[in-house]
Image 1: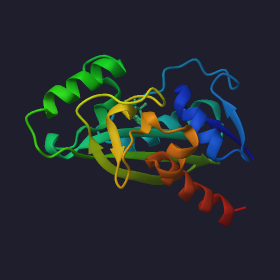
Image 2: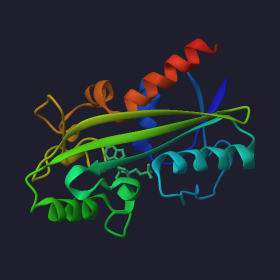
Image 3: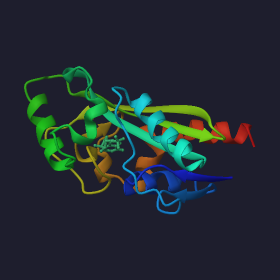
Length: 190
Ligand code: IMP
């Protein structure tokens, strides 16, 4: 079965393909989709479904979308669904700067990453959620990964996601936890 990966985020694509390498992946380019995928809802789960259903409805392709975000406890779950453009721009450096500034007055640095994957097969929708708890550190560490990886240290670890290799991040991450559920689903429905 061919599944279109409904994202243009090269880091997400790399992480997903690395973990589920047995799937015959296709891409937005291959299906000749040049549209901006809509994300107009107020929750990660709804935005994830919206992106996958957009592809199914317009291209009739089985597909997988990923919507994710970072929820910081002291900031009442923000940036959450706004993670990609928290600073008002799709700019990871500015997003991190604003997050560190807003979090500075608080002792509580607890946060979690969450991903909701949406798989659409023959028009039927299946969702898989994954999370990883951790803490936000005061200064960036590491160069790998993307987004908020340089300031997020997963629970029971001492390095940020950005200091880890792709393999190390993929054992732990919110995305990999959701992908494991997706893998179980595919195994049971072969
Ligand atoms: P989305 O494209 O709407 O799902 O935006 C997700 C945003 O959440 C990204 O742009 C990042 O800012 C953040 N994010 C999601 N997953 C990760 C991750 O694995 N590492 C770091 N940041 C992430």
